[in-house]
Length: 389
Image (cartoon, rainbow, N blue to C red):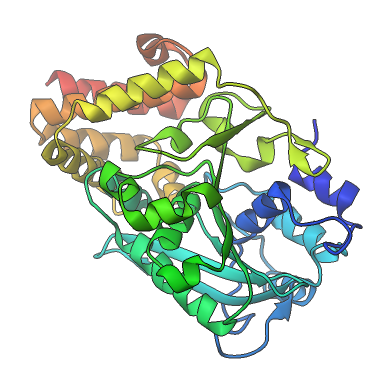
């Protein structure tokens, strides 16, 4: 089963002038937005882009004495992806500029982006998805009840700035997960002059929007240029509302792990397509959508704030820190939940059960009984004890 790493090994010798930019190239660049190029490439409008080959060399020089830590859920394969892409004729000469990275704990914002300049002059503006930071996940939760979140607004401003750097060239925009959502939001809120230059907007398994966004004239103007790609049991990519058509591709993983773009099967210059989502995926999507739809916007806000309070009660700022303390973390979470009202605790436990069922493809309550890992069993026991009190 070939993935994007195999794609670079097999087709990386084909320059973009020989084999045109395609959906797999899009995912490669979207994943590379997780690489921290700050201090290596010039800011937007502050100099000529640096070839990816040189940017990668500087990145690995920076990290030669310590491993690159991507976090709990960010694929570690992004680092070898960078190495392979940089060494290939297809990607090595692509220019890199405008590395932006913004984290605001008080404003609940996690935003990062980078701009790639293709050999023919086109731009690919890539937005990073949710990283290891807990505030990045809180911003995701906020999308369920806010018309827009800070990261989305920064994405629109960033796209305008990138377009200003190269005033006439066509533009591609994309991202994976939340980065895909940012790409669509930015394309919708960038203004007609820049919209007219957009060729494609790639949403790689990113969540949708609240309905009012899809009803805007500015969204309708670019809807036919949105390319939404989801795996066969997509969960993240089916959240909230979508109006554009989407392409279903085959993932070699199960449940939520299909969100990992490195699991998407590649055939030549495209992903392996499927005609429909799996029955399990459709069931999970209906379950989650019903759960969200049954809550008022006020309840969604309470849910998001309460879940974030539980996740950050130990002072952890990242998922890696959260996972490090095991039983101490579970006990602190239980104490935090104990102080919440019963309805809020029930919402949290119900969503946890749904997401675990999605990850293991088991019925909801069977997940609570399944011995998956010592830490997970401790967390579940502590959470259930808090709910029963």
